[in-house]
Image (cartoon, rainbow, N blue to C red; front, top):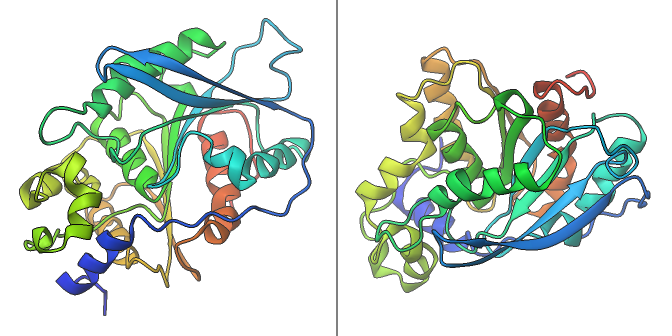
Length: 300
């Protein structure tokens, strides 16, 4: 039986802030480099930090243009998620072994925004991403133009954000991937009774969190009507996800399956932690690499 009841949903929401990331024990290879900076956002009225992982040939070939993968961090993390967690070493190793084509990977800082325009209209993070951040990055770096060279991915809250943005703006992305996306099919009506839940969700979803707004913004809801033709979709979740997010991921799988929308969904053994993400991150990177047309290992 799926863990979709109010009690489990409350536990999932309350625990979303506890995303523990552990370093991945992989040898580093000097095959790429990371560049961290910030961009001034008029929409958010502040500087927004970001990190860009540049592929091995980026500095050596000044004429070459590249696809880009926007990688979104989870709650409690920031733009340095791949650098601080050991993900950069994993990516460099994949490049070294020719398991990935070459593309940039860019992570913006998003605080606890869930990558949406907040209910109160004060934090328009979705507008920032679409109207400011993507154009800035694709002017700042040598990017290939167009949807076919743009992917989006993320973990936990970032998985929610990746699915939300790709489903709302399918004309912008050729592929979307998510690990343990923070999907909850139905927000419990009494979340305002729990101050912990309120603190986590109040900025993007209202104080107390508004169930109707949650439903409207949910990737599960958007997937019921969005035109997702041509969008490559991958997502996975741990069958023992500590937050019970496997139920929401199953729900998204059911919606896409019912609409006959091609997608790749996996439930793997594991919980909600960086050990799980690191184990399955290569699969989503290869998926994005293939979708952007720059190679990658063949699916098993």
